[in-house]
Image (cartoon, rainbow, N blue to C red; front, side, top):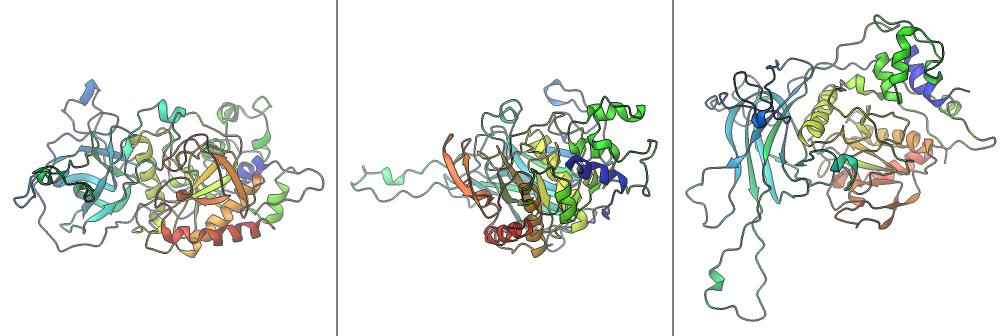
Length: 506
């Protein structure tokens, strides 16, 4: 009987499959009428979130050493981080109204995803964020688009090493805008609520007082993310270039066993499924039939295998994750008792061929802009139903994510790429969620139609230490007061639970 790791790695190595991941096509939001380019502002230094500039001959902030300028075409991608400031006061502005922050129209190096971050991860952005962008090489500007503020609902748990041991920032959701080279942004604070009429009359003149506006967070910056190029197609089937052929028993052979020298160091360093897959160059973990999936699990005699067939999963290697960005070590919990379904809130203006670019952009935004250790979600699903490995650490393992503040322990997060507050999720995406949960929850004995009791790590909905009974497949809003995963996707979770349980044979 094969070990589960063999099916995840050994089979993949024997016959690695590759999705047709094309270079990202140019994509722009609904375009307004053409307008002239604004004057170039390229003389202003543009810094990435590590505090170094990308303009030669400019002093890097905080004494950091400037790095060499990288071409936008290089595969690693890049981040431009631009400080926001109060915008010019319009002549018709009402006295005492909140000041609007942002950036006027300006040129930028090519980017495809935007978001706003600020210094204090605990501070909330009470207001609206809107951006408009210019398609690369044109004079066409998009309409204004809303950026979801989502105020810390996708994040590592309070008190966790990822939260306390890093410079974590507050952040909006990222928004995919397609290939762009111009941007304009405005952040409008919420106006204070009008107080109700008091029971007793106020002193004369008090009615003329203007309520204090809700302040915006300190240190707001606009993040412009270039995902870089898609990974090059793999060579024809066979052993990876310049490597020895990989034996089928590679995955469950201990590092001390006699193996070709070229592989020994790699096996010793690989501590999880995804690391081994990445070392071997596989881009896809192939699907297994129900029988093959059951065979891959060591069951007790007479035990009934409530586990769905393993779906095809595009690895981090497959979507082009730069493993140098993330923290080297992995974090794990004891089990996977539940799955939280999210939407990425990046908008629906992407093609499935662009999904790897969207993932690389979110990954860079999570790590470089928000300060997380890695991609926040354990898995992602695109509108065509393709499933992607998210946070590193092994697709079969209980990897600790940063997806549902307060409920990251013993759960997994699945992000459906897109925004589903007013748009129905594609049937293929809902089906993919069913397949993924039937398999992964089945590995840990969880019933997709069941209930589970989780202990809150602290959120705006449940205080720390509270025991909460939830569906095994829940929406993000079940653990945190948020719109995620969008009303339309949330309504489909009942269908996902039923289908997932059926795939498990329940």
